[in-house]
Length: 170
Image 1 (tube, rainbow, N blue to C red):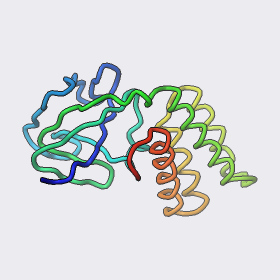
Image 2 (tube, rainbow, N blue to C red):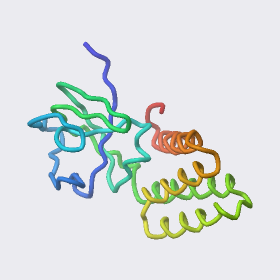
Image 3 (cartoon, one colour):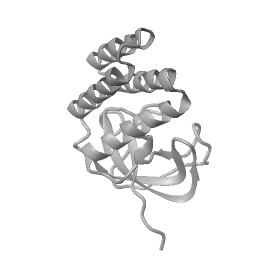
Image 4 (spheres, rainbow, N blue to C red):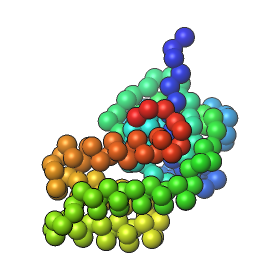
């Protein structure tokens, strides 16, 4: 028996897939015709991928069958929603983007070229555009410290979410 790995699926309200508009039934297995990342299959993410897939609802998902791991997602032949994570809500996402703002403000300090990113994050946060705010924080990190700084900021974001949600390590 393989060890169970907890994976996540970010959905729109009512457990609706944001791209396909498929309404997921909770607890029932859903089968895919093929596994082709970004085109076909049951897509999920790990804790470390959460900052890339922010949305209104977060669900724990179980995958089965052939599994393909990608850099920022996992795709399988079948999956089922196990439970909705109620701690994932607009207040958590607003707190998350506030943490992105604080990290960016600390990082850019008085660097005039990058200080505009703090304002960008403020505007995105006020419009509940959390995914773009998180990207802006990572991009500011990259411009100030290179590609590794981008990855470190994304890892910081994932660790923040994991800690607040009380889910597995990044």
